[in-house]
Each structure stands twice: as structure tokens, then as C-alpha cells.
Image (cartoon, rainbow, N blue to C red; front, side, top):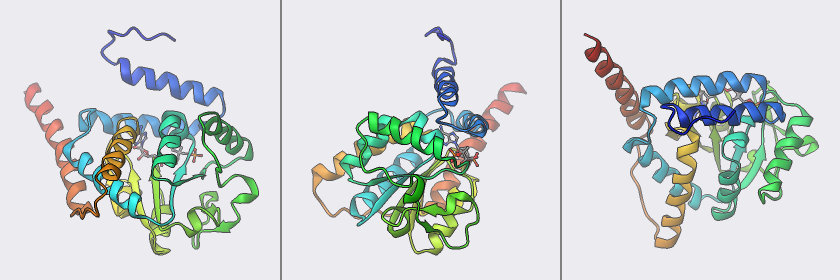
Length: 250
Ligand code: PTJ
């Protein structure tokens, strides 16, 4: 459907159309629609903008990724749907490995996502079929099946759009975890080393930009980052936005 450009919810509705199309193509799971809706709600609370706190988390993530030995981006259906170009660009500039890792795992969806990313220029995509040849200890869901060359041996894993027990299992394996999640209360957000509380469609281009800046500066920059403090501030922004709305109504 063509959304009129002057519609007040133009950007949000355009993203919904994208998600609808990805569902038809078998890229995202049916449940992915619910996950997207949850993200939309938190985006409303945060004010549908990248906050200073998200910018700090993005900078910390850029530095961690650039200093990593084997960084991996874990891609699910929603992520592949919303930011396929950025996934591929990120894989080239860091550089990092792309691994498809699905909760509602089917080989058919894995292949469709792989082909979508390959069409955008993605290469050596891991995690498909028998390539997911290792298990994350203590994780029973199919998300626990990972590639030996990818997530299993990674030192830093970028985990967008997931609320579950995988991030903690990855932490237990001694890895650093970066989350992108609009929900600051999700288990993944709370246990990660760096949580970017922002919409992935805004966060990924900013992460790419920050990596380019870091690389061009060519310094061994140190950056103080306290994830709990940063998440608290994001929660406060949401709370204040709600309080302002409440005041308006009284
Ligand atoms: O493709 P699969 O089979 O791996 O399934 C993926 C989904 C996303 C369906 C699955 O991982 C799932 O059910 O996820 P959850 O538990 O709903 O968690 C998704 C998280 O992403 C929620 O905390 C949402 O708030 C958040 N989220 C949704 N859309 C966005 C988002 N965060 C940032 N940007 C978004 N656009």
C-alpha cells in the first residue's frame, strides 16, 4: 500500500509495509510481527529518536567491535528485513562475520535470508543448515545451534532484536555482547555489556558512521561506558515522556 508522505505516521507505517512484505517473502516469522509491534510501542515511549544515551552506546559498540578479534553479527528475520544493506556494510567495514541465527528456525527461512543478504553483497554467511555445527551450552532452543567459525568462537557478538536467554548464555561463555533493543527491560538488554536502546533502522546507520570515524582517527581510543547507568537514563527518558503526556492531560 502507498502511504501518503504527509501522513503523521508515515515512517512507522512504511516500516510496517516492509515487515508485511518480508512476512510474505518468508523472511520474518509470523511472530516477528508481534516483536515488531512491541518495538513500535517502546519507540513511542523513547520519542522515536536516537537519544544521547543511545549515541554513547553506539560509540562504545563501535570501539568494541573494531577492537575485537572475531566479531560476529547475529541476524534474525526481523533484522534481515529491516536493515539488510547495513548488515552487509557493517560486515565489510569492521570487518565482521554474519551468522544467521533464528529462534523460529527453519532451513527454508535460513536460505531465504542468506539469499537476501547475498543479493546485497553479503559473503561467507554462516549458521545455515549443517554450518550450525556447535551448541551454546545450557541453551535448549534452536537459537543455541551456532557455527564453530562464528558465534561459537566469537569474542564479541552483536545481538539485535531479541529478548531471551541466549545473551546470558553467551556471557557465560565469556563473550562480550552488544544488544540493539528498544526495550530496555528485556533480558537481553539487561545482561549485555552494551545495550543500544534505539530503533535498529536508526541505530545501524549511526553505528556504521561511528565505525568509520573511529577507523579514520586511527587511535586506540578509550571510552568509559557504564551500561546499567545508560539503561537507567533511557528508562528515565521514557518515564519523563509519559509524565509529560500525563501533565498535558490534566
Ligand atoms: O527470526 P526469528 O525466528 O529468530 O525470530 C525473531 C523474533 C524477533 C520474532 C524473536 O527473536 C522474538 O520473539 O523476539 P522478542 O522476544 O519479541 O524480542 C524482540 C525485541 O526486539 C523486543 O524487545 C522488541 O522491543 C525489540 N524490537 C522490535 N523491533 C525493534 C526492536 N528493537 C529495535 N528496533 C526495532 N525495530
